[in-house]
Image 1 (cartoon, helix red, strand yellow):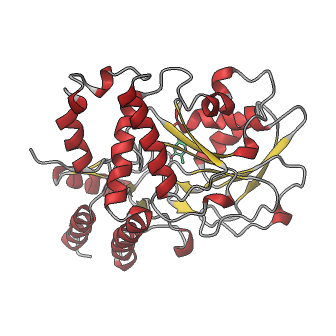
Image 2 (cartoon, rainbow, N blue to C red; image 1 turned 180 degrees about the vertical axis):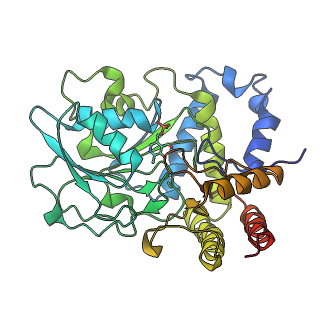
Length: 358
Ligand code: PLP
């Protein structure tokens, strides 16, 4: 069976060796005589899986000892609520840098809890460098979306927030390039792009931000619950955590985060060069803020875009349609997208352009 090149923004392509391993182990996980889906979350084999997943993430991101790794449900979207519910006490507020649609959604939830100040961009695709003076000194934290899945932008330099904890939604680029975890108070990501299947959400939280939730915070919304119970307070998404662990093993076997970054830079350069050299396709993002993961482009003509998408689908390139709010095309080049996939897409784009006399 031929697998297509899947450019979806998420749920997204998974490494083929991971899927094969899942298939091999599906009916009988390591001689247990049952599927990993059927294992009790309190059993020794599952305890090993969750511990190994945590350990691998710590190793791959060099997570310092004063940070906890937790696995939750509810997607990155639930984090939009959990963060303010945990970190904003009575009368407290936070600063949110709004770089796109997902930041706006985070703001909407936070505003239900506390006093939120937003910092907007002057130019939609240009993310400036922020310094401590940009933030209100009383702010409990500063929130960013470090990679903007829809707009195709990312921070080329993370904000310097001084003593205020920096919180980042890394859903669409965690493990794609090196980061210094110690410069963040909290990092979170839904799994379904670079980490595994949907259903599990990862957070990496500095100890000093745990145990701050007011008594009114529901138990399942309190980070302390997950930390105290090693993410096993209730039944976690066991199958998703198992596949996430296999994805982390694959990342490690393929050069770790550094290996991923090198691979991602090569892939992104191929596509950006093709767009920049083309007289048909266009990407609006200034070079320094270009995402390595999500690359929107268009011809500027809806009919031509639709033609392109139709032709691309016929050639086995799936989910290239841009987000409904921006239109055009978007190629998501997550860690598991092979270089050959990008090369084939570029060849197709060149042919499409030359067939139209470009
Ligand atoms: N944040 C970012 C940057 C995203 O790209 C997405 C989904 O694409 C979300 C949040 C929402 O994630 P979820 O569907 O896991 O709630």
